[in-house]
Amino acid sequence: MSIEILLLFTVTTALACFTPGPAAMFVASVGTARDTRLVAYAIGGIALVNAFYFGLSALGLAGLLLASPQVYAAIRWAGAAYLIYLGVRLVLARGGGLAAVAGGAASLSARRVFGRALVLELSNPKALLYFAALLPQFITPQAPLAMQFLGFCLITVVLDVCAYGFYGAIGFGVARFSAPGVLVSIRRVAGAAFVVAGVRLVAVS
Image (cartoon, rainbow, N blue to C red; front, side, top):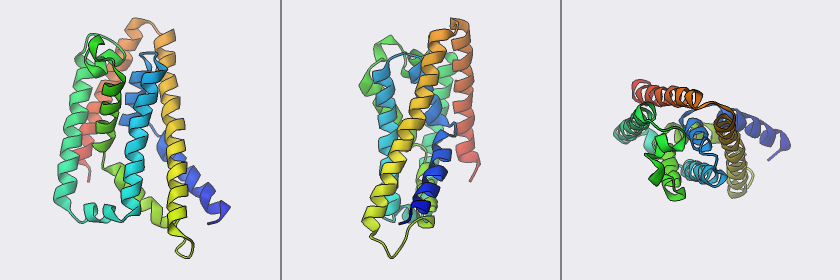
């Protein structure tokens, strides 16, 4: 595996990781709680699921998902329902920051944040399809496959941590320097974006 291939994979994956999406918005929302431990748990949940998706792709199970429209449709509908639910809570909740996401001050726990991050990323099968489409472009059949998969997986996890850490820092900064009214507006915009993402998940093949 050449350095050029590694660099190309890194750049391609970095672009995907840093592109704003539901997971990035969730981590930014968690960041408004100004608790680095909660942000770390949110990032950990998302990165863990992406590593799991990467493993499925490496084992060829992504092809099974692609070959089963019923399974894919079920995952899309479940994911869409969860995103819309999360978005509606963000829009309607009276509090700001993580309270709006987690459902109140009593819900501000690392375990709940980690669980929501897991469910959110698991509800997005496009992450699995992305890895299924990406990996074959960079694999060298003549080289040991296990080492290639391990290297690509480590790069992906590191980029996930960097990208979502960046969005967590944005949320942290917004909470620190913005007025409460601004936070409410940002939360509502994020909630609307979750709802749109949920609708698009089932509307777009």
